[in-house]
Structures are given as structure tokens and as C-alpha cells.
Picture 1 (tube, rainbow, N blue to C red):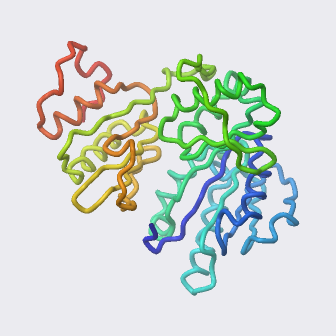
Picture 2: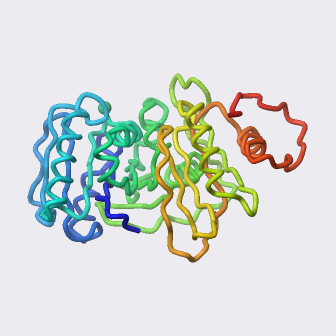
Length: 327
Ligand SMILES: [Zn+2]
């Protein structure tokens, strides 16, 4: 739902992941609606194929530096300019930022949130990450960055599914669902969205670990107690992320409240203002998904319960606070 801020969608994915093809086709099909401004970060200064961008309201190429690190200032300037134009009634309705293959979308989201002007005028509407279904298993074993891209995604787009090995494709589907249970996983071929094959539940699905990881990646699902005070939960979440934002890369979930269903999320320790969702309840309401390293479901639950002064759900006999997630 709109709060008046300009929605920004981030599109990431490794070099050659097919994100450009996907974006062009989706744009051409009108998937982003009218008035889309496309920002393209071409770290390698490859010219953009403007033919396929005719439906965009405008295109800005941010050349000469990756916008998650060396090109941050250029990105902020371009976005401030779009917000200025919009406040004069002439700007876009939505912005799509197509990042370079080297970018960490989580770092971009955190940088933008730390800019007071952009935080007031821009709303991060989603992080899309394209995954090359043909090469992803090799890339996962070699590239730490692709693990970071997956961890912050709201939507994971498996590309080139028509030419991928069917067993690899199933392993990716199931494995990505375990790595990031908060993300929607979809298929694409030549930029067109296609259905993914159904996958048996017991499919062997472990994905290659990141090379040289400091700790194994964790996806923890915290089932929230019924009759929870959402405002207090937000205070807990902020305190947790203040203390442990380096470990918790992403939090996402829907909290039922008297006001309605609230979408709660954070990227890299920064909590977004809760967003009111349409009223129909969905599976998965009442839980928060945490992605990161160095914590466990048990520790998160204990931390929340002790913060809210609730008794422990069940004494499981696990060592308490083994990883120091308490706040
Ligand atoms: Zn970068």
C-alpha cells in the first residue's frame, strides 16, 4: 500500500544471471506499471540496449562504479533528483534499480536508509535477485557474494530454467526455499515468467556452502505468541538489531494486530516502518523469518519471551543464550 513515498525496487544477481533480459521483458509487458524510471548501474560501462527500454518513463545510467560501494554518491544524487522531480509533479511513479553483478543489494538498502532525505521520500518496495539456474550451483561454491544476494531477496527469480538440468533446478528450488524462507521463488525463461516444476518434499536439497564462511548461514523462523503486542515486539526487534545487526542480515514477517496485518521487515539492522497489508490472513502470518549467522531459533524465542516477560514456551533443556542473542 502506498504511503506517498516513491517505491524503489532493487534488482540484483550475478553477472550473466539474466537479470537484464528479465527486466526488459517484464518492463515491456507492463509488469511495473506506467511511469517507471530505470536506473542501470553499469560498473563495466557496457552500453544499455535502449530499444528495449522504450516503455520506461526514463533511463539513467550510473556508470563507473558499483552503487553498493564506490558509486554510492552517484546513486544518492540520481535518486534525490528523481524525488525532486516527483515533488514538482513531474517525476516517475516507481523506480527500478538494476544493479551490477558485483553489488550487494543489502548494502544498497542500508545505505539508502541511512540517508535522511531519501528515507523520507523513498520506500524500498522489494529486492529481486536473479539466479542463473544453469550455473548457480557452481557459483554458490565459489562466490560468497551470491549467498549475500540470496539472503536479502524478497523474490528469487530462477532464470534459464528451460536449459537447466532438471535435477539441478529442483535442488535449487528446494535449497533456496530453505536458505531464504521469506522469499518467493519463481521461474523465468528468456525473461518470461514460467511455472516451476513441483518438487518432492524429501528432495535432497542442500546447496553448496559459501567459500570461507565465518559461520554457517541460519534461516530461523520465530513463531510469535498469540495476543502479542506488536508495538512492544517492534521495540524488541529494534533492540535486537541494534545489538546484533551485524549477524541478522534480514528479518521479514507479518504480525496480526488490532490495526490490521502489519508487514515488518529489516535489512542489515535497519527496521522499516511497519506497512499495513490487505486484511485477508495468509499462511505464514504470525511469524518472523530471520536470516543471518550466529543465532538460533531457540535463542531468538528466549530473547523475545524474556523481553516481553512471558514464561518460556517449553523448557527444552538446551543451553541458554548459547550465542548471546539476548538484548
Ligand atoms: Zn559494490
